[in-house]
Image (cartoon, rainbow, N blue to C red):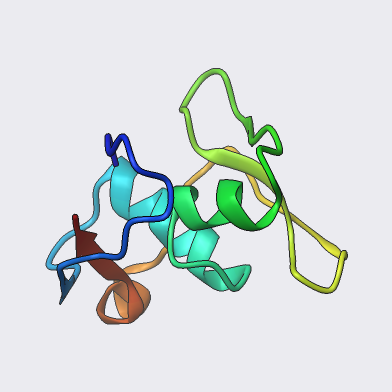
Length: 90
């Protein structure tokens, strides 16, 4: 997700094949209704993203309808949910 242009669109999309910390955070963003961290920052106009210091996982996200999702410091994306996670290439 290191792209200098915040308005860039992904070039391709694939599904997650296995669990990683990146897949975990993508799962959390997508569960809250965003494509990834870049889209969240763009929509929320630079809002800071709370992360758990121990794991680096997303702690809290604000949905588009202004309600909040709170996440555990432990893994929440189970094996059965991996196929739902979209991984974008920029």
